Image (cartoon, rainbow, N blue to C red; front, side, top):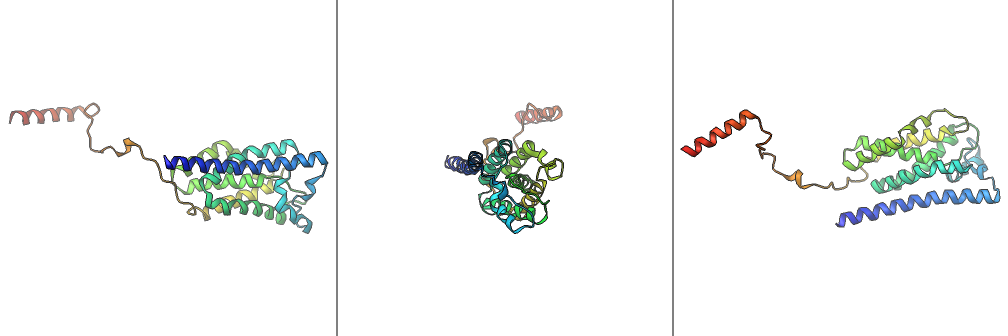
Amino acid sequence: MVETRNDTRRLRHAAIVAACFAGLIWLIWLIDLAFDLKLQQFGVFPRELDGLVGIAVGPLIHGSFEHAFSNTLPLLILGSAFLYAYPKSARIGIPAIYLGSGLGVWLFARSSYHIGASGLSYGMMFFLFMIGVIRHDRLSIAISLTVFFLYGSMVWGIFPTKVGISFESHFFGAIIGAGLAILLRRHDPALPEKRYDWEDEPKDIEDSVIEDPWRSAENTKKKAERFFD
């Protein structure tokens, strides 16, 4: 019961933190829309000193409703899963993905303003999938399979398939997320796994209903012999 309450509390806390970050993105977008601030100019602009500020603020800036909306659900789901399952790794991993993907864009990307939190989403997705492949506890495997089922198609986003999409943010986020999964694979101890009553049943109990016919006959003969001794 205590473990269940702790799990629920930790999941609630993770969801609240992820929701606050998503809410901040929407607040900034609404302020930009209302006052026409043109915040896109504060995105990452590669190899320009002025563009360095975008490493810190670029993921918070989105150019349209569709852009902000497309990032919201992945941030909520992936962020909650990351913070819940790997709280110690998240303290290192999320800032590293956030800043590292922006730095990779600044160093190597095309000369244009790069904005949006998709680099963070890609980093978390690749981290959660990769660490489930490396670790063998039930929670890691379950989250890895769920992430692959929901967002496996995101892998195509690391390639230059659409004009106007910062595939570089996706690529560097994915590389950093996968690398961190390898480095931090033992940083969070596996949660204690629940055991069920049927797992503790003796293994040598023979079920007379499903045993082989010849064994049933042999057992019956032995019982009869013991009876007449």
